[in-house]
Image (cartoon, rainbow, N blue to C red; front, side, top):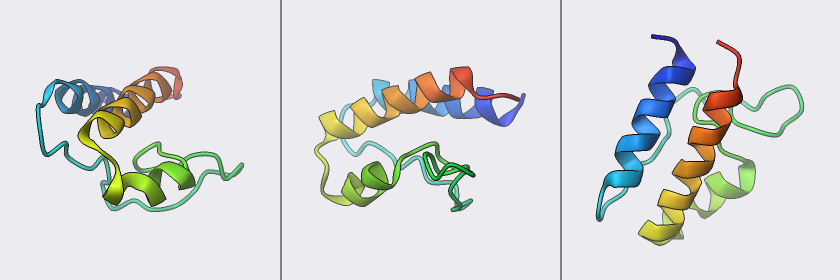
Length: 75
């Protein structure tokens, strides 16, 4: 299983949770070359900054975006 598949699985589980949506952070905190996404969690800077105060619904929305990004990420 590659990193993209692993992140996609984590996204599916996080989207399905009710409350206390887990953070996608895997402690690999560096932005890609275009400074678009974190290479570890596939979140944007704005999504990372907003995470701690985001509602569970917003966190699930971010996880859905992560799932889309991981599906298009190269292995």
